[in-house]
Length: 186
Length: 186
DNA sequence: TCTTTTACTGGACAAATGTCCTAAAATGAC
DNA sequence: GTCATTTTAGGACATTTGTCCAGTAAAAGA
Image (cartoon, rainbow over all chains, first blue to last red; front, side, top):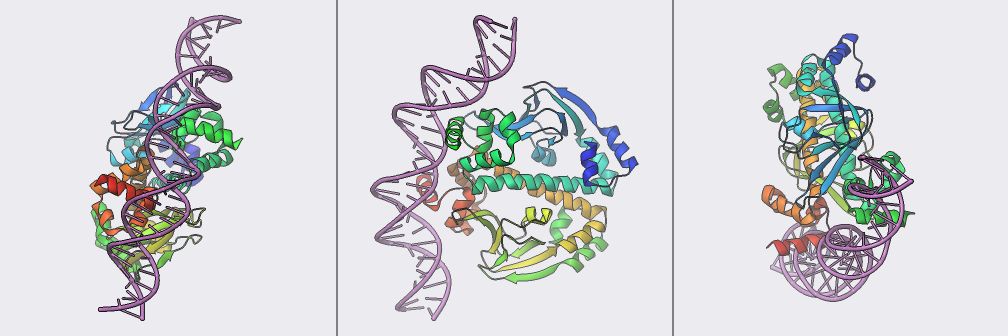
């Protein structure tokens, strides 16, 4: 994750070596859960290789996909990480996945170590906010069909790599309806 | 807005006087627009008295309410403020409103002035993120009817103070449908 | 207070979307 | 390669939600 931080903030060699000393590594198998709902999320993971999805379960027992994360992206239940309350999401590996991990204690050490890490914490939170805002806008402004079309136009990766059943709930529709939309679009 | 900051972070008298020197004041009349879409949002406002709403316009020309803000709350197009890109939202006063204003330059001065302001910037961004996340979850997990019921249970203020037409699009439904839901709930 | 405008309700119908189900296609295990 | 399992497509029908509209209630302006 180092180079992602470097691209956002100007770090000294010392600051980066501090990061190095705090990161740990893990691999997870396809299907495995990294976090289950009702746990407090105490770590932020960075994907070296693989795909993760986050989902919750509604009152009928259906799994609703909240988001996906691909290579070189971060994943966590940020809400739970921030509030230290139980997560509503489960985080699952969609493929075998290699991770770099920054846990709460490590992050707090970084934050205490100085201005630069404070600032990057704020900037990354801002970026997460902006992404979430875009998604919120797409739910308020667009229909399921339009969200699917946007995804085809701007995020081909999702269409190629994610099983349709997961895409459907991510788009806020049923698989049956997604199938209808796909037929109409062709 | 001072006391809100004080409640989150332990500030020195000097740090707070710096804030005092940077805040400006404004009053707006009911109906007035503070920000229109396609402007870059360069200030964060804090509501001393009154109510604001943020809305965008969809492809049919309908106004879709994005959020409301009440006394002692902040409002901005945070996404535009962060990215410096044009806002998609309009911000409008629903009543005559008294504001305290922190503009981009003032905020940057605070951030440059030290650790404490950096940190509060991150913490407030985190809180905004958590709020937005809750709203996103409610759109993915719940139906319009359920969102209305949640609002009745947990945010009576919205029901009492906001015209139904605005509440409807905030809940992601039409006024016609909200009227149906209200009839059923009683 | 009276008038004009705006907001809310609800009927009738239409469109969008969900439910349930079966068959075909794709994938994974051996 | 074969068999079992999972995923996807789509028919038939039900439900939800939207559209259009008119009547009434409420609010704003003179």
